[in-house]
Length: 350
Image (cartoon, rainbow, N blue to C red; front, top):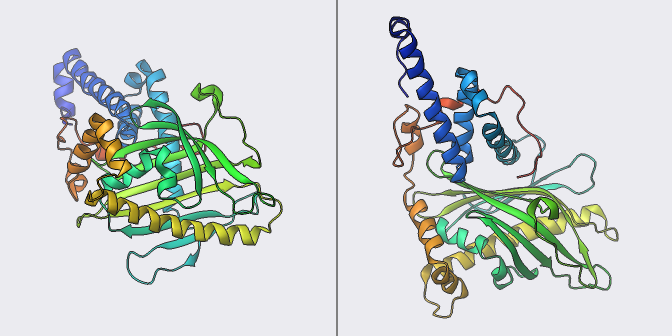
């Protein structure tokens, strides 16, 4: 965004000052538009810049911008969790570049480790997203998933769902289930990724009643989880996922739980890649995921269009402030340090 030089502002009197406010009012409008489109990273950069450079304009829209800030805290916490290297121990090193790697690290106040997994998978991003979105079809490709149901779809990129993980010895160790809220964050324009944020669903906040517990089932707590999906130039997808989950298993030593969780991460990644490739090939005429894509055609057409719009390295050019395809100005220039110094991180509701 081009701002008039200081001497022009002085020469123009009140009119120049109004022009400056108009620029920041446009930033606020773009910020709220980005947030509405689930582009929280871009929205956050603009919110921080307006607060830093035009606090009086920021104050006019405080309620709306505070909501953007609260949403950004969750996204920034999830990203930091995946990118922070401190304390992680690699427990499975890949056999080749891009192979599945798994790390764990102790969580404060818990014997159960946080986990992180990373792999470059040979499947297009849009089909990786199809599998994540079709909650009720999880059991088709995840061997440990007994059942799943979609409880609500509050917005285009938000889902409230119920999962039930199957136990092979339910008399000794009960099945596990969870009611979760997941939201996808569109970072394709400037951050080369889609982020998926997952945490426990709150019945009051989400206005969705949770299913009653089934026999021999324990409801687990998902403290937080984040999945980062990055499209690769060759057509594949880099997946980085991590989180902290307490399975409430008291009859099993923590070291064994941590070992099993590591194996689940590895197997889950392989199955996700395998099924996404099958769906992408489109050879199975009875493919349930393909049928869902036809039933929800408008949504999946939008997903395909968003993924197709991704251009490798475009965000680097965007740092100069050029307009994107949507007509908004790139927000990377607004991220210079504004919001990292104010301690904006933490676990707050999505």
